[in-house]
Image 1 (cartoon, rainbow, N blue to C red):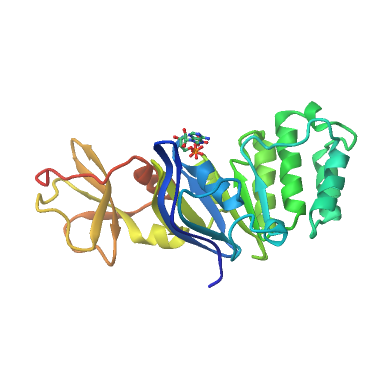
Image 2 (tube, rainbow, N blue to C red):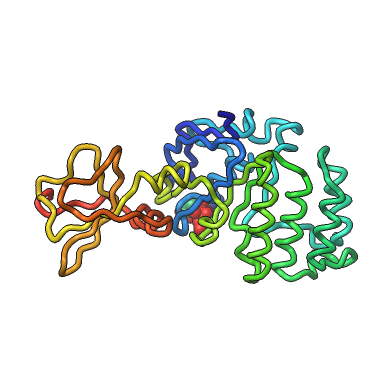
Length: 291
Ligand SMILES: Nc1ncnc2c1ncn2[C@@H]1O[C@H](COP(=O)(O)OP(=O)(O)OP(=O)(O)O)[C@@H](O)[C@H]1O
């Protein structure tokens, strides 16, 4: 398995506060990775470290086999769109494309001009006079036209209208269909992640709570319900992630290492949104009697 991003004990501290702690993960090549987590979880920090804009306080990170921003060859392999989709206010759309062609060895001018035309971005308009959404589209065009091996997107669709968002996610799916490009993108919208991602990373409070292949994660998690759970707890290999108590009983979202039938509880499959929310909602629950 070829790995496009590898982090080992990676951490970033700002003064006394850790924005990212002890992050160890591997992203296989050819994946579309959804990075989700609440505000301030450390998503932009992880993406900034991957893009080489930040330096780690601890641990290591490798992107496309090298330290991020290790040199021009490494930089050419990575496309990055920051959350505020930066562009040069005084340069026109066409001048951005020209600049891209000078700076990026793998630049695909056909892709860039075709995308700009399709989106209706006026080539002679300065970026400073574009709308926020149009600027985001320009920044995405610049990143895509680099033909990177890894595309890093920090909330790329936040500024786009629903139609443009839909179109962009479709495009992302097309761009990655041949598996030559990998994508890591952060999003607050689990529905977007569900639509385009085959790999998930959930960050909460500067730590990775869960990461892995979406299908494998869904297969390993279940909702189990019973009027009353045995205070002695769950059998070995079954770990509670979250609990929902109602007057009629308790439903646990659990991760199981193997089959979980035959314990007298009802078992139901888990959706991605439920899974993400369970991990985002915080600590592992404690059943009555286990306190
Ligand atoms: N330059 C900085 N100086 C000091 N603290 C910072 C800096 N950048 C980020 N932080 C802090 O690090 C933590 C993680 O921030 P980060 O921007 O990575 O989170 P995020 O998950 O991307 O959040 P959001 O979803 O709101 O964009 C936050 O507590 C934030 O306040």
